[in-house]
Length: 345
Length: 288
Image 1 (cartoon, one colour):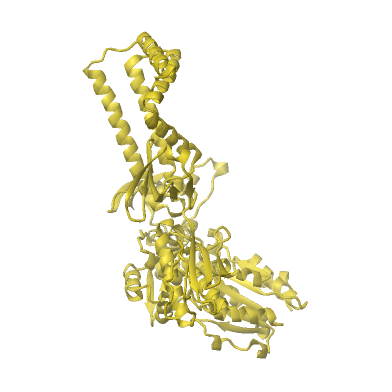
Image 2: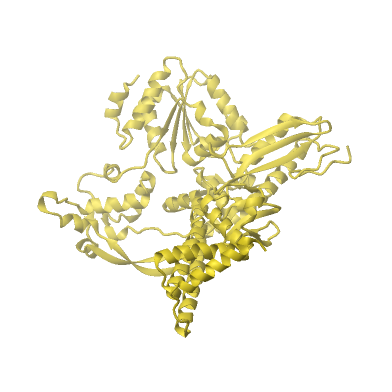
């Protein structure tokens, strides 16, 4: 059995020391016979897979791993009592329920199995699905340890991304000369005023903190490298989401070279009706949802073809082999909108 | 005619005679007209902008709209002050004495209008309801669209705009369904046959409620489903919050439709007799 402190020190996972320690502590306690179930909760692309891989690496011989990729039926739940391993690790538990009448039966059955089992259950959840289920079913009560993966700060994002390369492999290009040599620069921002239906482009003053820091008195001067400026921008656009940050990085990296100007911000002004917002919140609450599952959730009340077409047309969702998922680079924008309109609680 | 009716106008007339009135000329009239127009345009513009802004900010919609009546009263008070200053240039003592007596004179002469204005001020500061609330004032039910100094405008479910005098709050009960919040509790009653399985009905109604596209559930907005047994039927009552009070009826209708369809699929029969109720959403089944 790994000592949590030692295991954390030896862990290759970046940025989740405290969370890994909590999980390993729970695994440690599970040996005492008391229930010690764990729920790992994160936003989409928020680092759940990294944690799961680390648990499997550390406790591979004790772990029975099950990844859910589609909505589960009662029959599809395995007989965990027959599994030889003592830790049941289930990824993407949002698929245990669907937001429809009768859609909680599988989850109820699973929770019954969990609380009567002698084994330890480690489950991962999409944060939006978790918050919904916690509100309507109080699922938090079934887990002794709830680990919510935090948003990453810039230094952690930088460390995480650069750890994938050898030192000196990446070239950072300072093309943003104007941006870095002036206290402020005038940019053009598209805004939509509340009483106008059309977008307006207005000049906007953008403060350049990099230059401001460099003009500080010598003793207080802070050296800001182009690397830091680039990662600051990536982290800000990704809103601290590691998966989105990596995706953004990979999209902007050309021949191991990245420039500040290549990192472009996504703007989106959403205006969705009730059905579109509802279906979008369902897709956001799951890793990816099959058309058939969406159709079952929509029922006869919603024209799912029309809604999906509208969401797809606006670039909010992506489709592959009948599965729909949120466009990763619009994750923050979509989440903010759904929170504002009370589709996410 | 009472003593007060004769004394108050006389005193007001005496004080008014002592006030240093300016000569009323075209410039003064133009100036006063300009003040009134600016005040009106300003209140209209601010209301318009704040309402549009409030529509965009979701959760805090009513927090923004509650500023509107306050702004109106500030703008109109300032305008009145400038009109008085422009007309009579009184000393502070004269202004206070004149305002009091002028107010009393208005109170006797235009009692109802004055009462409405006082009601408007009370509504602004006491906030029995705010713009955006769903309220029942007297016999009128609907969403508060505007709180003016004289009246409150309510949009009824039939899409009628009703002006309720602000004085009504003093002599009629006022109830606000959401009290400034965007969410509002909705009660949905369904009636089932006394021999039907109440447990299944509760489960269905509960799941229908929490899977609705209009619902909001949290510690602040809990939900519950209750059963009560009556001689000829069982009542299954769901209480839950709609996430935006403007969708009150859509929420109620959607939950009812889906629950009734699921009741049918699960063999839950409607009662042979169902009582009349505001929340009754099922017709009695005459076939049983």
